Image 1 (cartoon, rainbow, N blue to C red):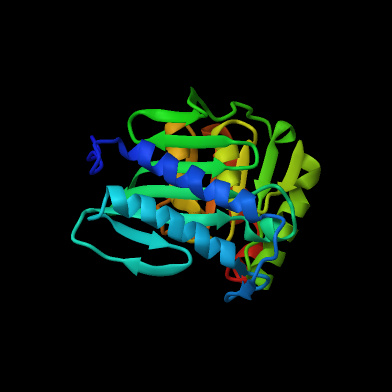
Image 2: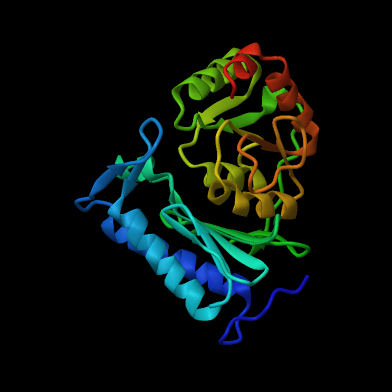
Length: 273
């Protein structure tokens, strides 16, 4: 499916990458500055004035080139249009990391048509790494093709996860992965779902699990995993969409192992994760 060119004749990927990089530069400029903090619904769910500024920067770029496209973004009301295309934006994924000076966060932009994610960009401004994918064309890290790791044994597996902002769901998730930690090669709490999914797509992680996501967290990751030959499902094993709240991502050989972990763990089910 060929995506429409922008108003100035550019590819959608070029426009999305520009928007992500400009927002990333803004994040870096203010990372050690005085931030205005607010709290959203959920445990320790922070928002800063820089989240909002980065979002405005992204939307300005996207609307200047694709004025007819809709927009869904974390910090603002949705912008509905008659276009079949919708940008899905997280201006700062990993806000808590950012606020506490942990250099692990990302700008995330996806482009969807209905439920299908056609393009994804996850930009890490600290490392200047752009993870990108376009449906039917592959996935890349800084322009070089990337692919999921091919490890098959859990004892070799490097697992990433996050806990979300619901205390009960996070505790159940922590207990579940803690129980299997001795069987794994390593376990990391990432602090950024977007980078967790991107790291699976490029082979740095073998799998990633999250109990409570939003469309802007997962949209770009869907494109990255598909383009890199990975698999991303909900906790019932059905193909994930950008509206899936609970996901497992990994290579196809390990997917069944982690889905089995969820299915067989009563804590996850009984707590309504």
